[in-house]
Length: 625
Image (cartoon, rainbow, N blue to C red; front, side, top):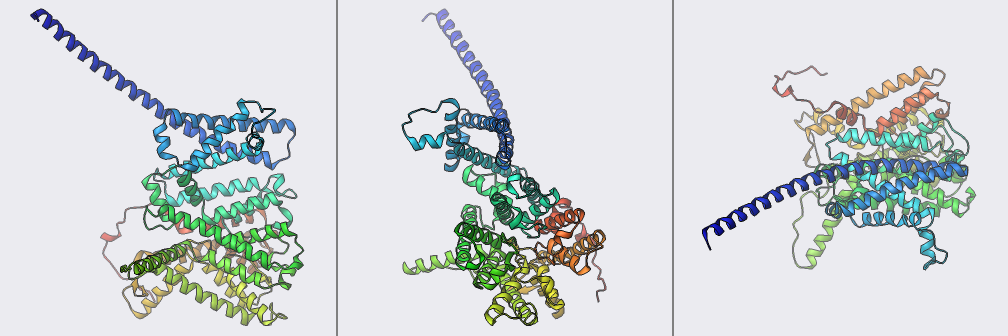
């Protein structure tokens, strides 16, 4: 090849390489800008879907909560259609422009919900055929039930996943938990005022009080639940109790993990602590266990209650089912609500089968022992099964020295001791008072029931106002103690009481540390227990002082009992709840909120972690006598 031709070819080759590099650079810039635009669009759509989900829930509540004329109903229906359009755009965008992330972050149930949103568009864009191919499928796809169900499911999933993503921004867990409870309290207070939820209109203060009592699983109410709320109102009340019992974040975690993929590592660590899982790998099995155990106990409890409901109550089969289900849910969540006149002190119940009180007490106890103990039982059971399987295979399984946690042992021992002491004390003190005229079996059943329920549930088969002063003191002590930590119960918790008593023993004996069951209790746990005791007393004194100022016409004993019941989320009353003024009701609502979220946890969340400079200071003894 001539030199000129070779030179020309070289120039063309260099020019082509330059153009190729320039094209690659321009393409990479385009991909970068396009990817950034897609990312921003994805974030904007996520925010828009979250807002649309919230508005969709509000729209559905207004749609079902009020009696509407045709024009208002059409307006609300158009609002749901707008939300449906936003959801459809989000689903299509994720499938077309963000397929990899959608495939990575979506599970089977999320695909089902997304498919439901796309199928719901059929009635929007295609007229209903006169001669459908499949009659029942056509009826489902073109019905409002299908549309409303799909929109509600997508809204719940979206809001749950949004809450889990907010957890990834290292939000303080205590503040996040408190805000979530406050959110549902306010929403519940508005929903309970809907005309279709109540037989007659109620004031907002009463609605706020009942909503707070339900979410904080207290049971105090200035209203007669059976005479005030319709079946829809009882359904809303049940939902608030269940959400408050298991915890808002547990529900959102369930929907986020099982519908919308895995959250961040920080979110998973928070979820692990909330559902008491030992590792991230066991997070989903533990969450399933907690929710499954709750469902099994509530269903089994409802069946047992149904079988023990006396015929003298005068309920038909449907009402009997509703009563059994509601009572089982309320008992397991230690809420203390009852949907029949006079509650558990109803004359027909008292004169009927006493086994209903024993069954209810057993359900209350199951909810008061705490999920950490139940998870520990599950771990021990699985360990025993693996040991049996290994033995059948001729192998030896190495088991840990302590299969039961120290927390489990302390809770079970303290709970059993308090239950025995409370039952025996109630039996002896009230033998010739409120238990007069009953048979020995009835006295034993009533003693067990009335000794267990003041620990948090708040049920009462005999009026606390008729108790002897000594019995009332025992009951108030039980209300102050409550159930186990991380359970449905309130109070300072039996864990706290056990640690404080063990610390007292170590001080009396002159020991350098606190020990139990051949294990030493960590110093931070001892300090936290002492702090809980002090804070509970301070808050109780402050609230009691404030209510006594607001209600000078009420008896001191009744007010002190009422404040104790509210602050430690018990629900028992000496009969003055409906006589409280609006200011006192709002004040006791804040007391129930503090009792549920935990005063110490809330303070630690508000203050935040501070630098500890005390370790650099010299020690000096203080005279403690």
